[in-house]
Structure formats: C-alpha cells, structure tokens
Length: 75
Image (tube, rainbow, N blue to C red; front, side, top):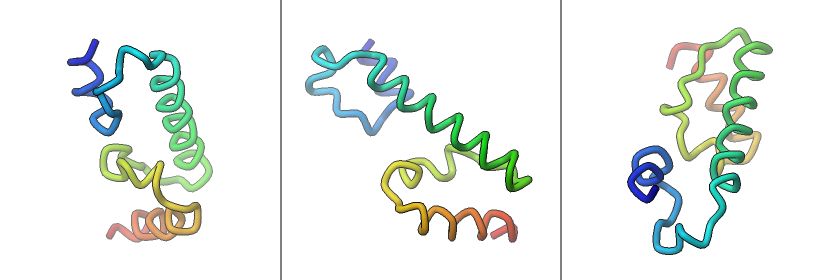
C-alpha cells in the first residue's frame, strides 16, 4: 500500500499512512478529477492534471483561473 501511495499520491505523507483511510486520500483525488473534467467541459480546454499537480490543491481559485487562462492561450 505504501508503494502505491508513494507512486500515485507523492504529496501524501507516508509516515502515518497506516493511520489514514484510503477513502480520505482517494476520494479527494476523485473530487479533483471531477472538478478538472467539469472545467474542461465548460471551458473547452484539455487540462493535464499532472501539469497543474499541486496547484489544484494549493492555489486559490483566482490563481487557478489565471493558470487556466494561460492554458487556453497555449502558454
């Protein structure tokens, strides 16, 4: 399990992974995927989640909007 989380969720601290519920981590990621799919549909953009990465969690919606505008312009 630790290897899976290290590979697929590198930002999740693994020092207490046994104390975490898989649904806590995976559900959050699925919510992000659904959010990005919604943005792609509404904005007509192809968004690479790997490119935005941590920004999807750490940026404000305003900062994320600026990144999406840059993606829309091909930057």
